[in-house]
Image (tube, rainbow, N blue to C red):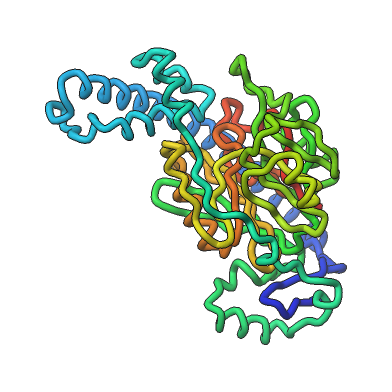
Length: 396
């Protein structure tokens, strides 16, 4: 039996009787079906490799070309090369910041700028936060509300009256989550909606394990990558988390003691977003969370992300709706089929999915989504698979 909650939210029990169509096939049809799936899987792997190779060389050529053009413009004047805006420091800052968010292209700004100039631009990214998150704007349904359900028809009518996108709220197959494709100008991605936030938790990556390994170790159904990690030598192993990190109600990394951009879940399933320190996390009863920036949405208000001076890249983000549902977002990038997204793109996507609070997570080669034993997106890592991660947001 399906249950739906009467507070603009749908909780559905997992169906007990799930008929596997392959069990109903005769041996010959079954073999044909499996062979077709194997061919499709091989073609997907081949096309992914080709896409990644061409995408890498294309992005590299574009990045180096743009950098050279900017330097030339600064020497002979922007008008001479058709870039009157090139004299603006904002354009240079955006380019440098975008490259610094990558592991493979960090060297590009240093071809044309001194180390001191690069560090000055990086240090100039100062956050502006005017909102303090109000947890009372999130309502996680109680057990009583869980079972005090509307009929599917009544729920649909209520959602339509509120102007909601039914595809983001109605769980058709009863597994408690919804996977929705996300498409925009120059990017593709996925939104994973977990209707019950108490199913979501932060998992530790150990010595920098892949999301596949982490999810299987914790018995999780799916999830996305989490926060930052120390990467002084540029190898990207994900062994050591960077910034304040909470797992299973305990502090595993204390960060810098000062308030830093943080996103985490409390013991009731409410997602907290903002600039917090250790005491703030304790006061908010955080049980799992990671550090990364920038905050995207707080109390339904889009936050100013321009201080990051960043352009397009692969992105990950996490958010929460007013009804408690957790939103996990990944956007592919550095590929022919998907160049990447800006922070403004993330804000707009999260607002489209009715996020009240949302925060950016580690992106670039770290961006990955896992579901039911497979990767959902196409990571931009050199291998095409999940890189080593310090932690991840998962759900059971």
